[in-house]
Amino acid sequence: MMWQDLVFMLGSGLSIVFLAPTLRNANANVPLGTSLPSMGIGFVYAATFFTLEMTFSAAGAFAAGTMWSLIALFRSPASHQFRTSAALFAHDLSRWVDRRRSEHTVAAEQYYSE
Image 1 (cartoon, helix red, strand yellow):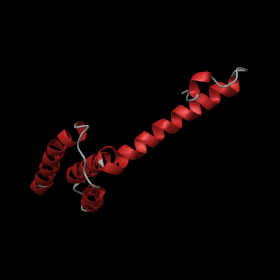
Image 2 (image 1 turned 180 degrees about the horizontal axis):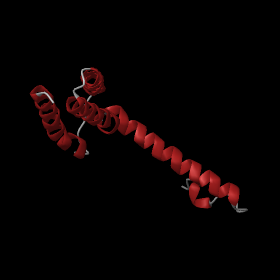
Image 3 (image 1 turned 60 degrees about the horizontal axis):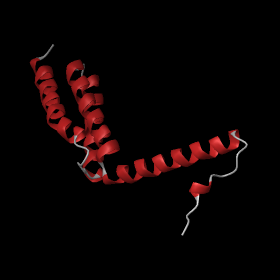
């Protein structure tokens, strides 16, 4: 094992430690223009380190790329809109399935009353 392998692994580990609060903060908004390139760089570095037989560095870079992909998935402004739309779709689908299974008509509370 080369000492450089450990240095790169420690650097990736520190980046994961510094990115963890962003992933935990539900109010964080990280643009996709930041997170997607960082994710790509992490995965490219992981592949590069792996071909150089720097296993620890490859694992650290892969973990950092994975952290950036989670940030892109959960902390980008577009993800909030997607999760809301997905939740509404799931709720509507659930109600539709329930109506199909039961013989009851549509509930009156579903409609707006003045």
